[in-house]
Length: 171
Ligand SMILES: [Zn+2]
Figure 1 (tube, rainbow, N blue to C red):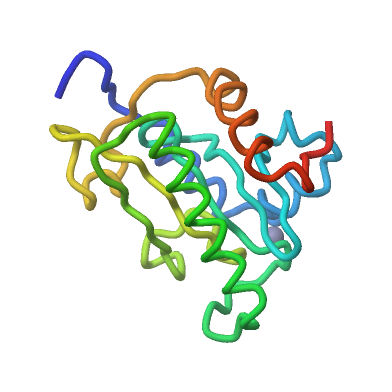
Figure 2: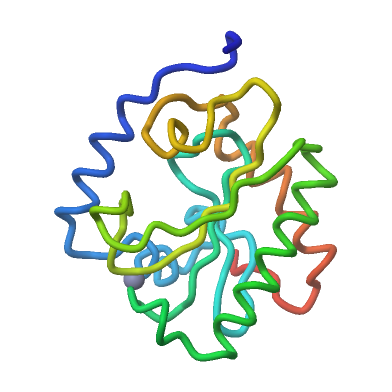
């Protein structure tokens, strides 16, 4: 652990409130009409890339379908193929910009599996460095690397724009 890590007790509060909340944070972000405020980095045909508002490390991204669904097994091939393509894009861009030594890509299906937002499936893209917490502690609310969320967005947006000029986020 270094000084750049702090405890993140707000995550537990956030997860509890997200479980109670009726409106879905992903659907709300999509509807907001301001992709910068919503931290949406990229919109593709069936799915989108968004910064996690409560990141474990800086650069923690999520890929989610537009459709509000928890049913991963029944995603159409078009949607799951595009989500895979977006995951590859995230890994490529973060790999170049942040130079992590590894990644965790993963999905928590269902609240009991640790999903903060269980009704709208999403895949986490978590860049990793040697010496940071292990995967399970990371998903168990242990620590975060501090970077202002707006700074993360400003840093990453041009990289996503450059590699995907056809689908710029709404400003
Ligand atoms: Zn939703």
